Image (cartoon, rainbow, N blue to C red; front, side, top):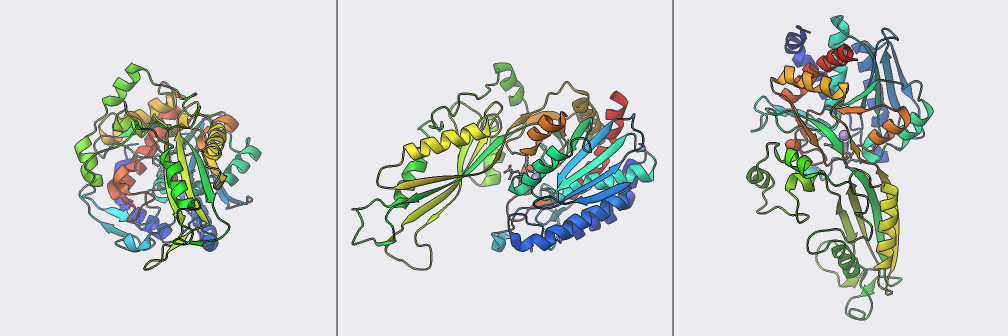
Length: 461
Ligand code: BES
Ligand code: MN
Ligand code: MN
């Protein structure tokens, strides 16, 4: 693969403009107002896969958003790589906090990305990272360097729980048969220190509703005499952590897989500056579970966070009122051996238990999924490691991430194959936030690294 660097260099302007076109389509899966754009994006992905050299590409209907499937089978005796990615994106709001419109991509230089970064919703998560695989395939096919079979499965519901993908995978085990699954939907430590993600946290996402009186009340006439659902909800949420920031739900930690001293010491070797971390977020102090470092708190430990809370009067000026209802959305990030459905049950029981008699409580479970850890003594990991080493000139470090891609555990269960998480984003790329971006360097490096993985994985198989 002597040509990959020069091929990327020669075609980089086109690679960037093609991605920009894809980013212009607002494929927000959470909001049905964007349904047409979801279909438009699936179509664009299909066309891109065909152009890149897939022999068979189809848009697979599901009960929800379509899945784009493509393949190029060159020899049944050779290994097969299944590439997974998602074409849906998070909602762009709050839109007023974007420096340029979320679906009108622009390239701007930043301190971390001196070569420029593409600013748009989905630039990094995951259209940009998914598209690296399409362009890597283009290179391999055009230059006769595709060493093995490849299948693509690009879905449109990752950001809302991959419900239709689970349905699809259960029904298409043969079609999706593979030797390894390859995903670029995570990050790395920095542009000078690549890393390979070896773990993802599980997730349990719930919504709660606290109901007090049957109607909104005058806060003078009734205040102090009936339970205020917002006050109660705030107390209940506060009680979910103790003074050491341990979660107080009985049984919550029972199945948590603890890391050995050696494993924790190994983790602590990864380059990390607490000062830079605080500076980047403009916080004076970090926060979290007692007895663990920042990197442990956001990867190997389970957590509970309120993601949204509402109720009562939030319009202009003041309105003296005791609301009838208060609500919150809560996510729990889970670690290996914790089962998301079991945790959801434990949460529900506990939350109902701690509610005072003066209110009624409803717990509404949303989506969830299991965590995942990949071994590093496999040919998949070794091939990925060699690929990064060659394209970056630096050996990558294994690192567990705090994020979740719940479908990965399901892949292992249904398709019996391991996943390699070759991410090229950075934590500072603002995924899910206003001003999401993806470094041009990262995008091109990804395109350069992926064919090397194909080569080494095939050689080692
Ligand atoms: N790509 C992210 C997950 C991610 C990002 C993992 C960075 C590791 C590093 C994915 O699109 C995502 O946002 N997942 C959701 C879960 C999903 C069920 C909504 C998450 O982690 O919140
Ligand atoms: Mn993603
Ligand atoms: Mn995401």
